[in-house]
Length: 310
Image 1 (cartoon, rainbow, N blue to C red):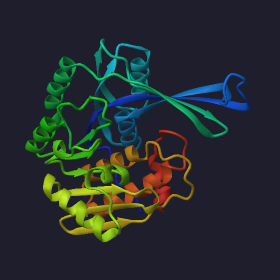
Image 2: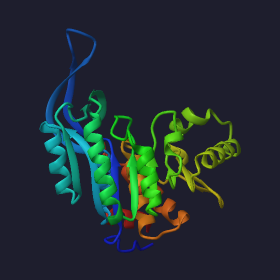
Image 3: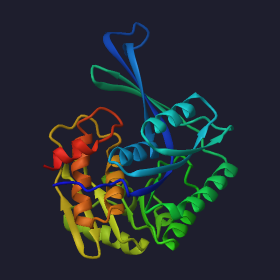
């Protein structure tokens, strides 16, 4: 399968951004102070996380990407701005001096995550208002809107954003968080993973019950479609025309962190390019299969995706 030219696909991505820091080291002994491993750090890496990772994934496929978010007036916020520039993303990161940029620090020893430390604060009302005003200004210049909710407070106005985008005739993709999905009503599609959906609709005993529960939720929220990512079971799309299932394609699963970002980014690029649901889901599923073979929040390049599709 040949991918088309995505350079005309214009995405507006809004949501919670974070800086993912990785400290890699060697573990050779247990601490004499407590029964924990001692990690001697040998190198470190920084990567964009959250909505910034969605933006980076979409840009890696060749789409034109604008990212709208909030960071603190700190070194981590500066790192995110730099990383977005390197990834060819037009990032408008509003600075809130009252907060610290969200940072997730992971300590890796012997290729395994030993510890994760999170630093986060919710942004202030005034900065979010300014971001909403810029969202309305930037809407006409995009084809598809992606709202990446990580529950960090950056999408306080998500209901308003969905209304504005839909009124402007734009497709709206939402990566949801939490157990209140009413705020996502009217979006084109939401993309919960298995456990996130379970939090909202309860457990299901088989695919028939999953389809019934997903369809009820889809209608209740007035969505065109609902995509459930199901790890080793692949993914399932529920829409008015029925259900589309895709089996998992990963050859080797190394790390699932950030896989949802790759899925929604690929889906958004495909829809902006004019693809139908079945084709868009197929390509997004293959992209997920590539990215879980990489460590940490990573991107799938256009070349890797085409190779995997063929």
